Amino acid sequence: MLPIIRFDKVSVTAQNKTILYDISFAVYAGEKAVLSGKSAAGKSSVLRTLLGMHTPTSGTVYFQNQSLSPQSVQSIRSCTAYIGQEPILGADNVREALLLPFQFKSHRNHHPTEAQLISVLQRLQLPADILNRDTQHISGGEKQRIALARGLLLGKTLYLLDEVTSALDSQSKQAVFEVFSDPQLTVLAVAHDLDWLEYSTTVFEMNAGQLNQVK
Ligand SMILES: Nc1ncnc2c1ncn2[C@@H]1O[C@H](COP(=O)(O)OP(=O)(O)OP(=O)(O)O)[C@@H](O)[C@H]1O
Image (cartoon, rainbow, N blue to C red; front, side, top):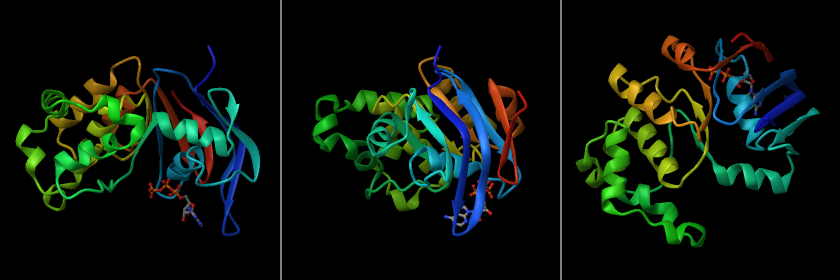
């Protein structure tokens, strides 16, 4: 089986500072992989490199066996949900935020029904009436789960997550793990939380821009 994601001896320099040193790892379809390590170790930089926001100074990043290029960045972005610590929902209320991508031609034929919206919210332990709430007045943990719900509605299969459960209580966190137990979904998550380390199939430990697989 070929990996979905592969870093082969990748180094990244930004503003004259080397932030990733010669890192190699692979993530296979259906894996739930975690990037752990201290603050400033380079975890988010790995996700940003994968999305084409940093260009390697040496080494190669592969997505589905294709080296990262302007074309493959588009293909990785189209099947990926990237959810950062403060997702930007881009709309005034939650229903509009969830439906926003379905205004575009590429998703117009997959417009979700009200029942589908409510079902995905329930899977993430969010109440149906959150649909009418103002996005400015929902919590950080709710925002992250709305961004996750949007990824699920769009049928995204690769989830790049940056500390998405840090603001969640254990019941909501378990709901997120339950959603990701789907073998069709591949996860690469930055997380410090012991629950994530236990839940994951694979753990990469980062330290000062270097990476080692520890599980
Ligand atoms: N565009 C950039 N220009 C210069 N330095 C950068 C840039 N992006 C990241 N860095 C530096 O690279 C290092 C790693 O940053 P990164 O955000 O990847 O760490 P992290 O492990 O995700 O940290 P945290 O857990 O605190 O979010 C940090 O020292 C950061 O300041």
